[in-house]
Image 1 (cartoon, helix red, strand yellow):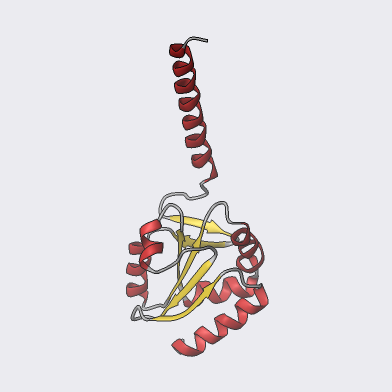
Image 2 (cartoon, one colour):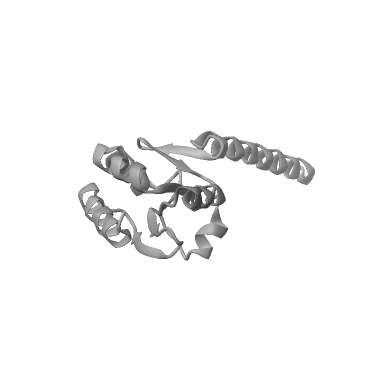
Length: 154
């Protein structure tokens, strides 16, 4: 095969892979606009929208870092974020924000989050209350929710 044909073949193959990867990334996204449903809970996907709602409603924030390909995120969402008790506590007491750790790298880096799942609770004044790095079982998450609620005096 002539060098020119080899080069052309490599370019065509590279372009094909690029377009397939772009399509694949787009098809993985569950996000619709400024919100996403994870488990049975709806989260803001915009940090600024969530912070504004937190100020308007005078509610603390539950900030959940995840990624589309994170196995333990999916398990947490199917177990904890689909549990009626967890849903009730989160919806009544917090403004919910989900950050995609891969797509929203700057936010994750600014908060020193380098893995998923990762959760941070903030009080009404934006002060950090608690971090939960990594996967946590539903029962343990409920205990942490009670702990956070005790600190913020809902």
